[in-house]
Image (cartoon, rainbow, N blue to C red; front, top):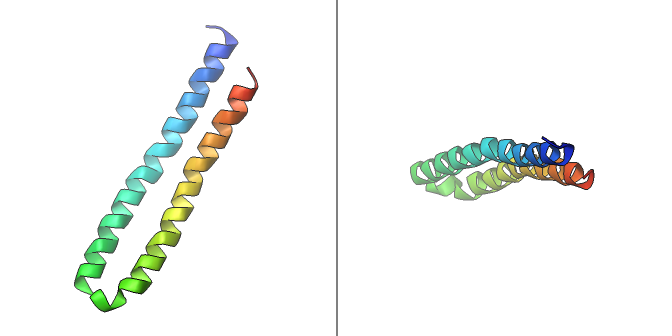
Length: 76
């Protein structure tokens, strides 16, 4: 394999692996938030705002993986 092929593979793995964890976490978070809102509708505002903050932090992990992929592709 050439070095550019290895870098391309590393970039693909960086994006793939940094997407899997937050995707699973966001699914679980949304599920539990909807469950909590169904049990306590009066707390929906607090639950929703906490969920949005948590999802934004999870999405930051995915963006870090994308940033690393861009840095790897720039080395080609």
